[in-house]
Image (tube, rainbow, N blue to C red; front, top):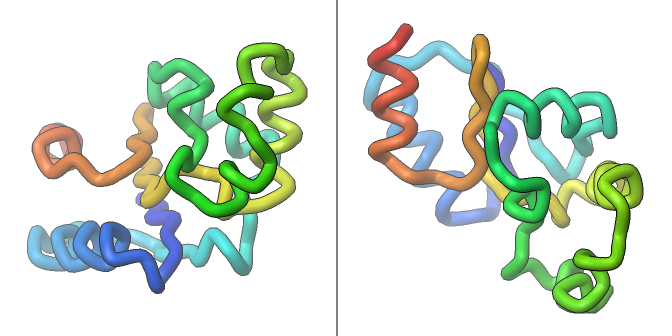
Length: 118
């Protein structure tokens, strides 16, 4: 599995500790140093089953600075993917990507459900 995180984020730290505590094998990636590509974001979005707007880190400084709350509804999906690919800090994190799934944000019950399927 791929674990995409921002190491300074407390939620990401909690999710990583949870994965380690459950013996999950994963590759960790710093979202700030290695931003997800547009192709990755499209793939992860398809695997997640979430509305595209849920991939945005709505509590992030960059999201607020760009005024995305008001701009997103008028943007096309292509524009949203392109924007997300410009800065990893715009992407909701942590992200856990595995065979047939992608989870955005840390909800222990959802993560446990995916690990049980493995």
